[in-house]
Structures are given as C-alpha cells and as structure tokens.
Length: 122
Image (cartoon, rainbow, N blue to C red; front, side, top):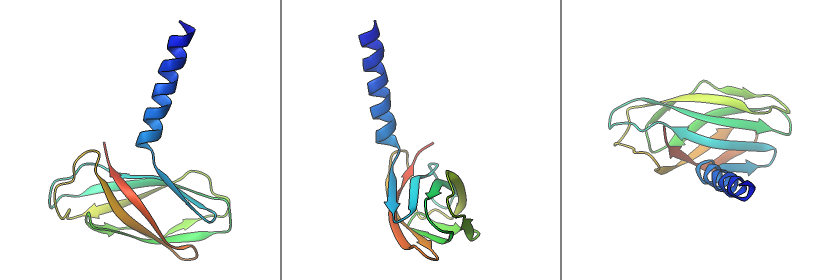
C-alpha cells in the first residue's frame, strides 16, 4: 500500500514538472507563462509568476507571435516572491490550442530581454 502511494506521488510530481516551466535570469525567476487556448482573432489572458531575489525592476513589455500584448508596466519589487502578472493578448493571429509552446520575450527595464515560452493551456 505504501509503495503504491509513493509511486502515485512520484508520478504526480513528474506530471506537474512536465506542465510547469520556468526561466532564471540573474535575480529574476519567471514561472509558467501561460495563456488559454484562443481562436484566431480572439482575446485571452496571459499569466505568469515572477520572483525577484535582487533589486527592484520593471516589466515593460511582452513580445510574442500569439497576438498584440496589452500590459501596463509592472513594478517588480526587490525581493518579491510569487508576484502574479497578467496581460491581455488581443487579436490572436491564428488559433492556438492546448499544449502548444509559443516563443516570447519578456522585456525588463534593468534585466533586459528574457526569452521564454508561453504554454497554451486551460
């Protein structure tokens, strides 16, 4: 019984690791940028979590082929943990489906440009 529970726990942890993705760049840690599936021409929300082990910074823009991104410049406080950031993706250039990974660049005032992928998921 205990072995079965251990195996089930290991499988669930591996599945979670396969879904979540992240990038570390200097003091910034970007975790699981994702957006909902969207039809061509549609709008959806992009969400990611940012932690910052260093000084304050600011997320100025997000560049991606998915759609035009609407993002208010977002302050990233020094020593921030798990700051959730939301942006709107407007006018999807095509239909994007579950499990697609789409390149993006996150542009910060101090850290500069950070390449990461956006996962399309629910």
